[in-house]
Image: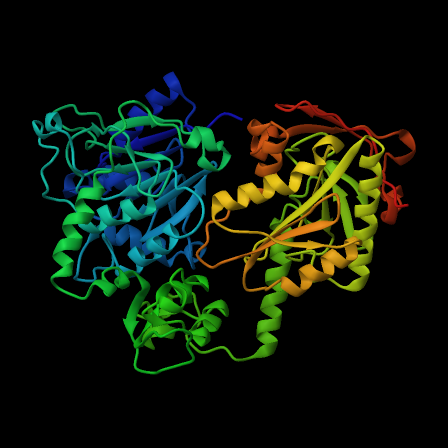
Length: 620
């Protein structure tokens, strides 16, 4: 699948005729492009262009491809955006854009969404302390992005108003280093989020900076500043980009650096700002401002030695805080629970909501257990529809299913590490295979025994591993066959990998697989992530992952890829398969299959890995 093709544009200033004429020209000569992302001021500077602008907003002129904008200020902005805000289709969290008209979307405030596989973050408008309804961002918007910076994953594109960026001496000659019309808050956010591309406008020129390395990140960032549409200096105002989404890139590709890569310009800014702040307040509170939103007088249940009058925004918003017990603000569990029940954050923390009736969230505390149960059931149903592994989901790739039992089913992975790599997956949407019922555990043992016997007949041994995320995704136990000659080295290589990450496995030796899993249940804590691997000779290695610990989600696969000398297959996305049905006539209809023992013959047509399968699993 080819990477998405994106057009980036500077300040539009209401010149939509000129913009879309250029877009259509570029689309015809070098397209097709998937979207246009506009930074800087989008609305007109004067009323002279308002009629032209409104022709597009009101549907008299056509917008050729989906267009997103963040510069929500200028002539006519209040009228257009107020109408968009009142549209019932735009209620609630709409991080992927408020629809203004066909193919035109307003990125309001701040957020992060996926656009054709790319992770796009944005901060809309300019900094202001006047609390304007449009054209400015709030402290809440900044806090939400800071919370995003602490989440796993890499942001591909970050769209902002201009920030202060240190440039080279040659750039200073054209006025790039002018610090007017810049925003230090944006600079701080860029340094924290570390996007692969940072795009900004409103400086009047086109500027593409050399890539710079990030602190505590392997990838580089590229800055692009775009000129206004129709500028007299004929500076470049539209730029084409076709980046591969970071989520699909290998570790080697994402960490690649060109010879002209520089140090991060924000390193110097940080040093300067910290030295100034140190004189103003105690060192312990230098970065505390990002963790709380408002003062509150009512004290509630808390964990940690937090400030009695300030609540930790990160904890309420996400349910965890990287500072843990060391956080200087309160981890209010009652407030977190109310947030999960759909209560407005402003109402929870301030006691009122400035949005009034326009707010789509609840403005009363929710204590009704029946309501909570109903919401939980609805959330579970929605999860099942979106989950890759739920059999009732439209997203499930049923052609990969090998065998289905009562509590578990066996499936081939989308990107197998080796031939006969298999996933054992609960039929129900449960977060792990450890804390299930005895009946489930018994059937899982039968699946594991079947796989071990099958691998043994091929001169191989089975390695089982599972990553248990505290965020509660659909569980899957991975079974990977390895040559018998390498079985003795498995424990050593896992221990070596753990040592490199700075932890030690807890090793449990047992003669029966059931005993090993029983010990895992005793170690497991639902409030923490957990990893374990069951080795061929009966040893189980396990590790309880600390709150702030960086642990690779693909750790088990990466270690086995190293053992088998196939490091290029450590990322499953490099091994994705194209599969097709090969069903004999008697079982051409799925309805005729026995649910407990479905046997599907599959032929894999590899896209990158050499792999074929044409077999079915049987219970012994």
